[in-house]
Image 1 (cartoon, helix red, strand yellow):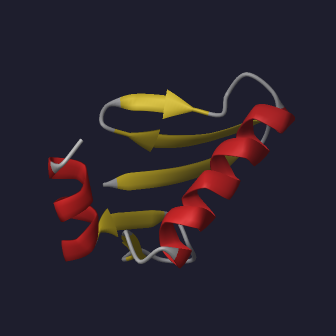
Image 2 (tube, rainbow, N blue to C red):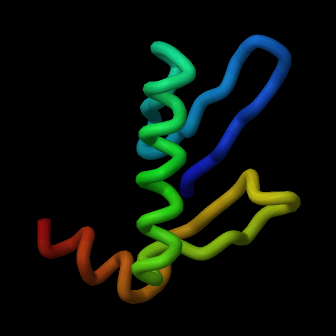
Image 3 (cartoon, helix red, strand yellow):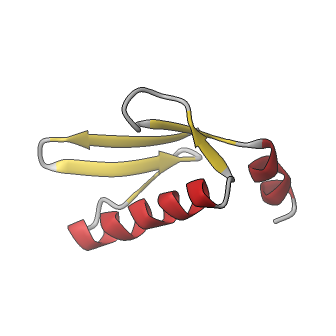
Length: 67
């Protein structure tokens, strides 16, 4: 699962037990763009409420297993 967390003064994208994008606004924007790329490539799909939870699609799992 990929979780996009946003609160006052803090924004992160969490996946695989790690947090990404917490270094700076630019760092967060880069990871957010990466998440958008995964969505466009049909590797992840939104599952949660208001764009905060995502899961790998079948295609996403196939790609991940090949890494």
